[in-house]
Image 1 (tube, rainbow, N blue to C red):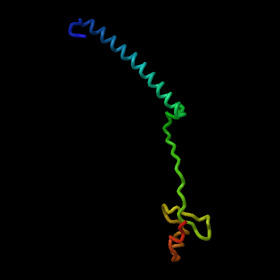
Image 2 (spheres, rainbow, N blue to C red):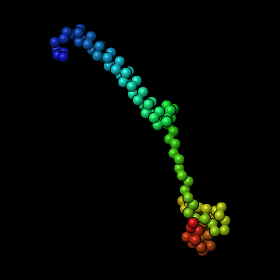
Image 3 (tube, rainbow, N blue to C red):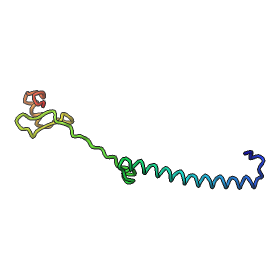
Image 4 (cartoon, helix red, strand yellow):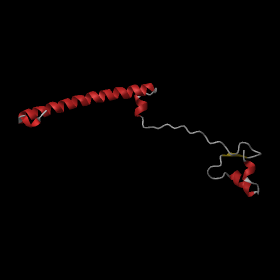
Length: 102
């Protein structure tokens, strides 16, 4: 289409028609996108609320204990973080950490 041959009023009318068509198609495309998103979510067993939720649920597996007191099995330590008092007392008494290893 050669726009240079159109009159000014025709160009203004064409502009209005193009803008109207763009708005109509934008609504149509957004509607299609919403349907596709909902279908995809449903195929994974998710609801709209699940998809829009900002909470990220992560399940962390508890860390296994690496050390256990030989006399009291309720005293255990993963080896992470600060040494518990019973571990420090064990080491201070001259015994090695390796003897507590599970």
